[in-house]
Length: 535
Image 1 (cartoon, rainbow, N blue to C red):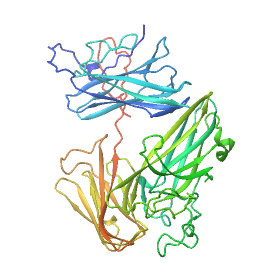
Image 2: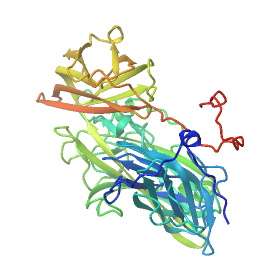
Image 3: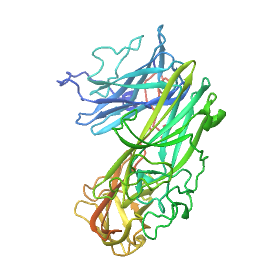
Image 4: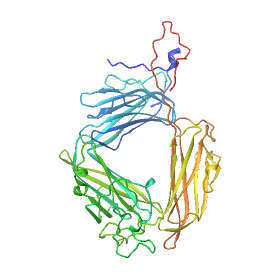
């Protein structure tokens, strides 16, 4: 028989249990919602964290919430892993495991509780599903019960829900990453060259071989190779005074920039989710990657980089050479009238254990003439703590001037703005709902083809202005920033453009460990509590 610890609250250790008629309960009391979160792709042999969450949106309060998850065959549990406690592991003859987190937390109204565990993936590729359940009780003195096989005992809970997450076990993985905050790329192939990183990660069990990488860059992005060349016709430039692409320095790259085996302007329907259209197809075959990168061993990973930029006009087919050549940029204007998004798609193909595999990734990018990104440090909430907020603004290379530029930030309730910290003439006004509005009227001072940074600081209050309640553990809030300006482009035309950015902070949750006290004395009396401690 499995031994289970009896989990009792301090009040019950010393209190008197009095019988009472049970309350009338609705179905699912409380009506919790369950979710399972795992990485979309897991490498063979990789250690990953799986997270289970239970949300009690409407109440009433739930107590002693317990979790159950079935782990697919092939996975192992990292010993001692798991929060807020390590799960009990029940092995089954078919290779699966049932994990139990008993009395992990309470599910209070409006709150989300969670448990985690670290797992090591097995050696077989393919899709697998994590299935999980959460059980809670509306009586603080009742804990959901499970039998020897890890199945819940009917009637031992009043609220429950289930969830699942299906993931792919893969031999290798590729990830594309554009080095621009919030994936916003200012227009300009001369002055806003942008680095793209392609990371390949191999599994932790065996080698892969004959890897090849193909990147489909949308027509409104120009492939600039390593950023230091221009294959446009001799003596030409994108616009008067622009200079050649190679007249401006290439951006710094921390990873190798490897010459592709081929670069083509194509009109086709690429693999994956991209629609039929014009693309720059960039290929690094096994020879271009070299044997070391084309045949990565167990646990190996590497990153290669290239440079891209947003030209004034999109690429058209044909275009030769297709690298850093503006001669075939005869397509639609890339000018920002509304938020313009494009998708970059990259795939890696190769062989693992004698079988061909493909991994892919897609990244959504935004092409901007005026953009703002807001960041905060630290990202956590602490009463009395000081936070520094930074606004980074960019105006595209193809914008000659700005007018009527206004930057506005809505600072959430719970924060006090340090007005002495406001840069560039910012002004703060406290609103009736407890929020604060900061406004910078920059007028025409934000130049075309430029960047600018604004900063301010806040102090976290002990209470919210609006409700008067304390700022608590687990609280979170979001600061909203926006910029609006009238831009004049290279053709002398004007238009109003805006951009937004949202940044959040979150307070750490409280941690409570429940333990069974040592046996009490024969007379059943309790101590004075002096031996109890909190962490």
